[in-house]
Image (tube, rainbow, N blue to C red; front, side, top):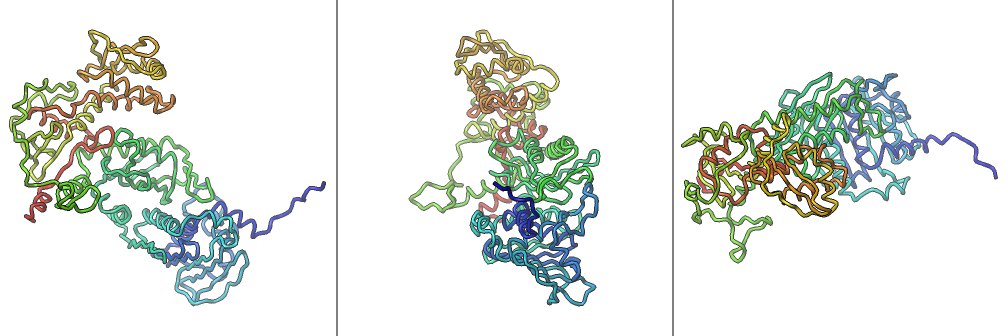
Length: 604
């Protein structure tokens, strides 16, 4: 049996192989062509698509253009104007010289270009690898690239594409991500599939970036974000991070750029999760636009042909800098609520409002009424003082607010003065120009959590011995997990030991939490360990343990509070970073401006 001889592949086949790495779907074509336009210095880029990019992609720019002699080189593999011999300092978006020949091997590709100093434009055509031209053709300064019949000669690739609408959405998302970092460039996207996008240039001044971000993420983001900045050892992080209470169900609203290049990097995604680790629920994601600037020699963008991944020389530095920049900005912002919660609250009071988004008829459930008398009055909490024990948060939390409670708090505090408590869970406060509603359990949970973290960083937490050990029955596997972590739990002031095969004895609980439901606490801690399938170790997740304990040690829903207790809680919230959300990412308070209230009553 004779073996086939080694031979050189046909150039068209080589390009089609490369296309399999560079061009997976129409959005990849758009990405490559738009990046070429930006590298050519364009400040106006127009994209036209048809059939989700399968039948037509046309990108037109006003960049530097190419001469007739450069057109054949532009479609030859590994020909580029962007680098020479140095792959260690890539400062352009494109550099591999693979995109155009790869596109031309799996479609009909037309490139028409003209330099400003030339009298006419020229075009070259590549149809399934066959080349025609260059030849004169009418055209404006800049470059027009048209791609039709994508993957028509590679049907196996074509059948893996999604619906026209899905591919059009991917193109729109690609343009948004590229445009985010270039507010000085106008982008227009249009197509027969009704996927339109119009992003006028916002300029080059300091406000241009947030204006561009608002075009893409919406004005709501601009009202619910903080500016971030960090600089260390040649790495600079800047941008805008959303408030924890302004979050989304997916990570699609997270935009990360490295030296102007949109990237999807696992380490950077992990850094964002770390920055919001104790502020968001597990299934919620922050909204942010992060821009990392680093010496090109300290980052490798030549990791994958699609250039969507990067590799930092010092990934730990970039991660730590990103986390610290976001956390510092959120902490410096102080107490601040998301405007989206207030908007939802305002909408709920409008006549005909329904949680399902449809007006309610007279036969349906009643809409919230603004005329029904409220079942509370200022001072009612004092009438029921005998119904509950004194407010006893830890000393770390109680001081200084509890040391000298105000008899009549001024309304000029950020969270105002407490006026009432309703349904034994919500504190109603009044500021100079708004009404504030606070979830007492969620708010105090955050305060206890921060106090636990602060105290634990300095010492082992003191414990209070139980007169009679609390025996908690648990599945054998949960007992094993908890007993294995008894030393770490002791740091929190929680002392346990095995009590037979299916139970643990709780002998002491953290003193700063006061009276604790030991049964519920142990079950929740066991669940935390089980969630990690054995890999989630308590000693590596101190904040998770603190969060669980804070939930059990905070003011419970259904507990009546005195006026001074409510005001003490408000003052502590104002002094605690991140108090706008609880440990699980839920808002701790909602602020409704007086102007919004007046609109509800038709006064404005």
